[in-house]
Image (spheres, rainbow, N blue to C red):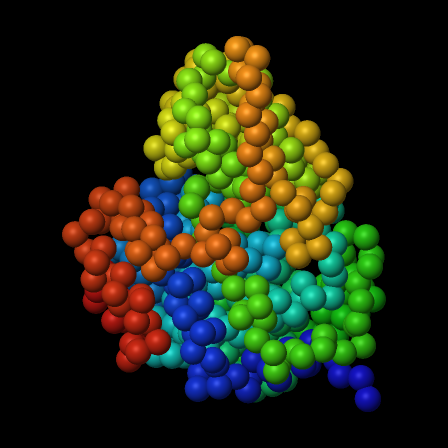
Length: 453
């Protein structure tokens, strides 16, 4: 007899226990908490975060949950919204499952975890629950959701966060399924808003939706228990080409095989759209082999997939936000600054005449070649540089440094965390907070993170 996917997701979430999670899976979740907390703190003073704080009237030390590990507090749904937005504001957060899972899951879990007094082990279990549900959703459609205009982080994230918060609240299987269906009806996020303040807002809204979905389901609010698989439900509605499969039951191995061990997390080296990371790695590798000055370069060609080229939509950005979605900027920053970091993602740097001049000499060439292991990606991204001297240089990259296949070391992850906190003026407490996050599964309560902070 076929099993409703929505019901199966609820049963899985309700039944998941920390002691059933493999140690390697817990370690990946721990990495998600560490990286997300770092980029959240680094993004706390971005204008969009201030707009949300002011609009919501958050101005004091009282409330269920802390804002960006600082002194201000707010009700958990508001904290999830603000913290999720802060975590995604710099586009420096981790990548997996065709989106940015930790930037939604971690803020939702931390906010609700504080409100409930959850243990570290419970928060790790909630993360794995949200990740596995998110992974199950993408398993039913192999097409690239950006092609339909969706921002997968906002779309899948609302459901994943609902699952995570249902696990934290200990909902039974039916209530957890209602929470998941409620999250599905709050899914949103448009690719057209990439390069604006609204993109990180997608992540914050998804985190907030997760908190609210679990709370409402626990209070008795109902939703359709086939909302995921119904012909007018979640998977059909968001499908780029209507090629959804296996909707009569969960995918093979769900609840037994750990998707978090299959997909893992890719940690960003650069605070830019992940679609630009391989080309940026290629240009930096080329420059390491053959140092160049901007004035030596006649033209730069970037070969990437058609889908990624569409996401990197800003050929001549004029702001730091726009530059996060520009292959032209990535190439110019790599040549002129020798890196693509937080210091380069400013309006002032983007508007420098030499940056604008070099961007104008960069052309993106989309390819229809595909990588079966990475929906939407080409097998390689290639950078070709033509010099005024007539010399031609070329470099290709298959997996960006930090991808799950070529992961950052523990030392590199720690260094990124320290850099993020230094950029926020928080170097003094960085080491203590890193250690607490790194040992999150052992914490007796979520409030121990605030003690470190």
